[in-house]
Length: 182
Image 1 (tube, rainbow, N blue to C red):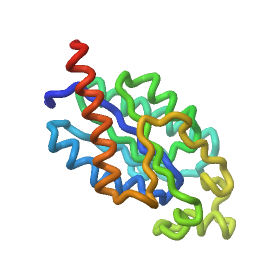
Image 2 (cartoon, rainbow, N blue to C red):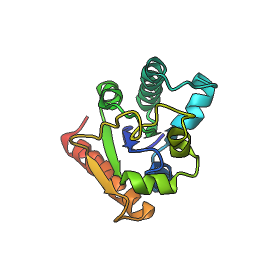
Image 3 (cartoon, helix red, strand yellow):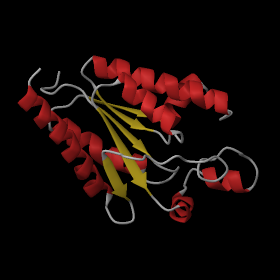
């Protein structure tokens, strides 16, 4: 059990924007301040919930509701949750925020052309050659956060520095909580 109340952090951005790289740097930093951390990475969770995903709108709506619910249940048990998921609609992230009292939305900003060059999974390639018709930022709109608690410009910050910026936001919430009391 950590010394802190739990918090949820949702890293959102285009596919291949750098979310997972930042998460890999952030998790040990959070553990270093005493947090018990669980990463809900969309591809890993999808393998369980939708093993043969279609990425249809109905499937995405259900998937992100389930992901938010899982995160809320973990947070209710003093687990710090990191959502590593594009969540191309603001409504998905807003739903999670409505379920989790301490919530940080992190906008991982990356130009589309750079995300396409970084795309080791082939998501954009599949979209460009017609194998997929629902790639966020390509065929489906990506609704960037309007007022994220943290904004990361991946062209300007390393993953380690980006994680440190998120960690500062987490520490600020913990400081505010300790001043206000339970």
